[in-house]
Length: 133
Image (cartoon, rainbow, N blue to C red; front, side, top):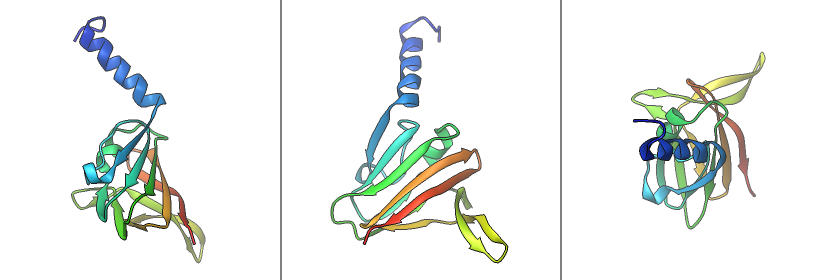
């Protein structure tokens, strides 16, 4: 690929759009959420599990993934797994104070909102988790 040919310019333009844009991905299209942009919104519009590992693997440090719900979704589980390894972490209180702990999944449903941030290549942190009442 030559940087100045059409393929090189298309590749560069794709990288630029992924760095600055926000994309909305419907969970009904794919249970393995693909990488589209570094700031991405997953619209969960069906019950079932979603795995955000594909997005996590390609997002850069500081990438934000928001999980919101639309439609008649009963419940969903959000994972960031590859094989048997979970890359999702959440702050938890311990007797020694707050600690960041590895979690296998995040249980989400129609009244929740989650903001996940890629801290590094090994951690996707649940930065915000809101349950509307």
